[in-house]
Length: 266
Image 1 (cartoon, rainbow, N blue to C red):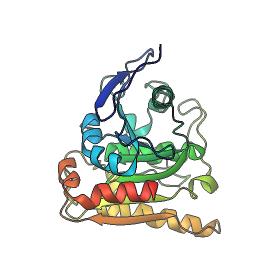
Image 2: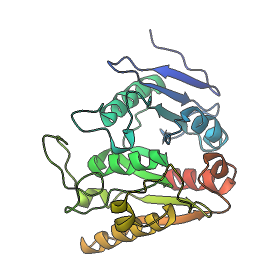
Image 3: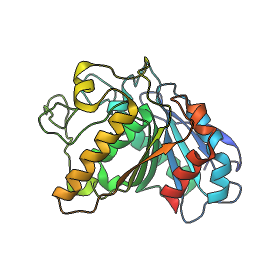
Image 4: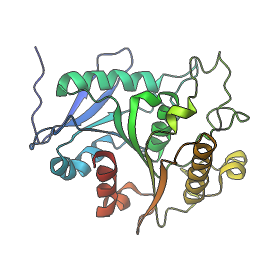
């Protein structure tokens, strides 16, 4: 029997899988317009439900369903990196199973994705898009703490050098990835070196000392790579006024949610 989903309610759903994987889903009362689905990935606070409830008014305005995976810390400790080593749960594969379940539930095909991720979720989103660019239509990255650069000299996840036994079946297709329209959002005051930030010397030297500097360097690197491939740059950076790294401070600024939905659906 097909499960029923009540419109206007944030619903938690479990995926039948070996490892636990739940997600939150929202069906707008206004209905799903033109197959619109926002896939929103939480940071390390794992506040997936807050992503849904916070974006619900905009989901109604835009006629978009919301799907927000919940990666449990015990099973997906480093989901931000896709968890692709042989010693970790594969967050990317769990993500795909969750989306297949959501597609059956919503009766809408979410592929290619309109993808948003905040902080650790922004790390997950751009790494997922790096290796699966055909699955992502557009993406918004909200203040990732650090990035994977298109650098074959540094090991993944800092760069793209991989050892096949450790990172199986991951290949980077720059021509495809560079065609994905990407918006990076960073708060005006999100420049502190807090405990959630990766502060290793290697990341500091290669990417910068705070989220703003790292975003600027990554956007610059991706735009330079696009020019090298003869492509028009499709990566841009925008500042969210008054926001620090607390998710609530971003959500409190109307421009934040509006920028996400406008970029993904307009």
